[in-house]
Image (cartoon, rainbow, N blue to C red):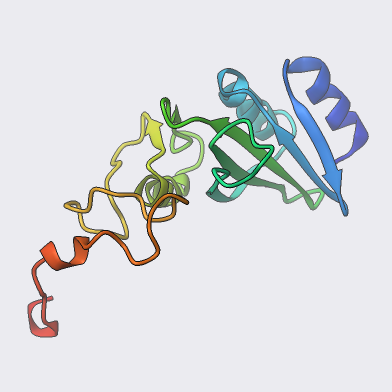
Length: 165
């Protein structure tokens, strides 16, 4: 659970935040336009220096969802053992957020994985290309509208034997 003074300061400093806590885990949803300034503030002034993970959730099938995607960042303050989930909500017509690679070098592959699986673009990423699938793959397989059996894309790729790899 995050210290109350940090939550109060966050609420006062940043507009449009939605905060919640469940079973000791603090979560905040931030509008995209305030995302980068919140991340800078958390890292530089509140010592959330560890970016543990970046992932995405497709809310297409959720009845009450207002946005299609939720980009999820898991941050940790290693000095106080606090963890915070920061979420940015996105819609399919504008799936772009600033890259965090300039702040955390480890964000590189995490952002590439989200790009590869969901199609979220990270503005300013130094090498945004597929990391799990071939470059010729044109779909994003972790989206809810992607069929479980695929769309036949695998038949178009050349077979690579072990001795060729």
